[in-house]
Image 1: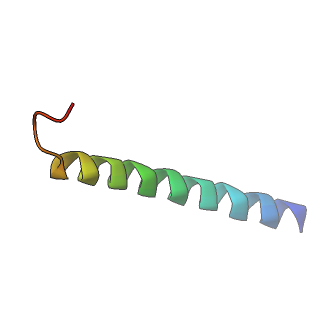
Image 2: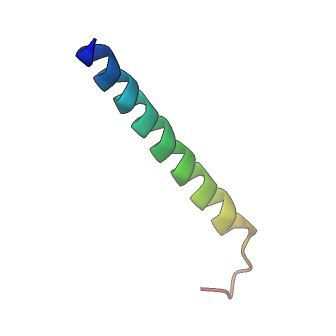
Image 3: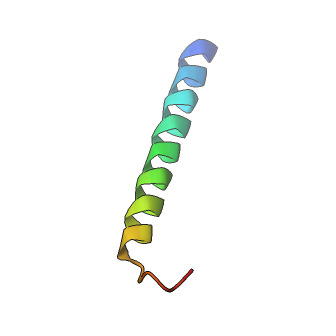
Length: 36
């Protein structure tokens, strides 16, 4: 059971990281060029 929970946590962390990167890139595209 512990292995299943570890795998689930790992997959959740991967999905969260991928979503964060996608949102960051998408938000960066929405920003005006002179903001940063």
